[in-house]
Amino acid sequence: MNALLLDEPGRLRPGVWPDEKSERGRLRLRVQAVSVCGSDLHYYKEGGIGAAVAESPFVLGHEFSAVVNDERGEEFGMPPGTLVAVDPAEPCDRCEWCMHGYTNLCPNVRFAGTAPVPGALREFYHARPQELYPVPEGFDDVDGALLEPLGVAVHALDLARVPLGATVAVVGMGAIGLLIAQVARVAGAGEVHAVEPLAYRQELALELGCDAAYADSAAFIEATAGRGADIVIEATDTSGGPEVACQVVRIGGRVVLVGIPDGDRFELTASVARRKGLTVMFSRRMGHVYPRAISLVASGKVRLRALVTHRFPLNRGAEAFEIQADRSDGAVKAVIEVGHEE
Image (cartoon, rainbow, N blue to C red):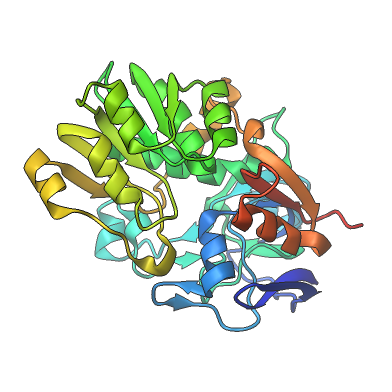
């Protein structure tokens, strides 16, 4: 089948991937749309994340939608042709962490597009029915793909536990940050502020409902007369993101770190976090949140399509990665439409 293959850091090419045999307990899907995630970019730029290193060639992609391409789907209420959002995480459902409800922390998880499990940037994919979520009428394939990053945002807000009327600051206005800002409002934030150095992303943050946007921590601290925000959620790919988050949060506040830093390390001035008495939490992926994510979009409370700035067919997928990695041409979220070619 046609696929987009990662040969080495910085090199993606169209190629052929062997088709998988249908397995008991899995349905065959025809992939429709795959959006490029920040973690995909770490593989693209660095060849992996931490100990998870891709072997060549490798197929990336975990934010995706598909249509059921399997007669057995009828048994699960998903007949052939059903458009589904696909949860890329397949937890073992047996370990201590799964049994306690922390499926997002399962050490035995199979996660699409994370080495060694090939991802969705190919024509067909096989998944368990329990990881498939039919989307409502009015959703298209791009909406289905973007439900995955929205789920990450929902999980981050679950960890943040925003008090009603609290001031929330979001550091980093990439796709995840823009979704977090929207969900924070739904979660009860009184004010939502963006900290983002790129002007075009500041503008989009304001368009999507942020009360104000600031280029750096100094500007935000000045605007709040030194107080800072009650809750800060960091969603950058830089080693300095957590430092900024700890600077802009108030004394006794809460910080949730969502971003994956380049180089797998971040910087943090210990005295700032310690003297403020901060609570710092790390967010990893998400749990069972797809139904809530679908409801947020269906109700109009969260806008997904506003994040999509570029679309490419599968055979030009390398361009999607290049433009999003470079943040060129106003890029926020690039989508690869697998069923399209030029």
